[in-house]
Image (cartoon, rainbow, N blue to C red; front, side, top):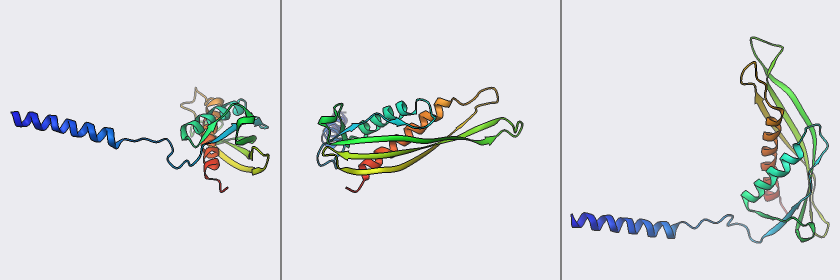
Length: 172
């Protein structure tokens, strides 16, 4: 009995020590220096309502989550300036119900975003790079319709990921 108690205490102590010493989470260990990024308001030249606000919000969330850049609210204190222009929102039917071929059950949406990045001196690092994103939405049943905001929201999430990846992986 005494031996089992000793093994239990020793085991818990060893587990606690290994947990405390072995878990050193770092947000981004490959980040050499902190660069600050200012995101200009997204310019929406498409017919997609609210796409610029969704994209702006989701892009900020994605950049904060990835931790590669520090976002700033002042253009003068930023190392990099990001400019985005949304263009060519297209929504097409993707599928039809076998019972009713006039009523579309699925839609495909796509957008194009042109990305430009400048440094604080005004030199252009990325000039109008085209990034494309597509998304699909389906009806649950005949009496419901997919929300137009739903496809735009998912388009903005996917586009935010692509923009964040482009910024992080760009060859300087």
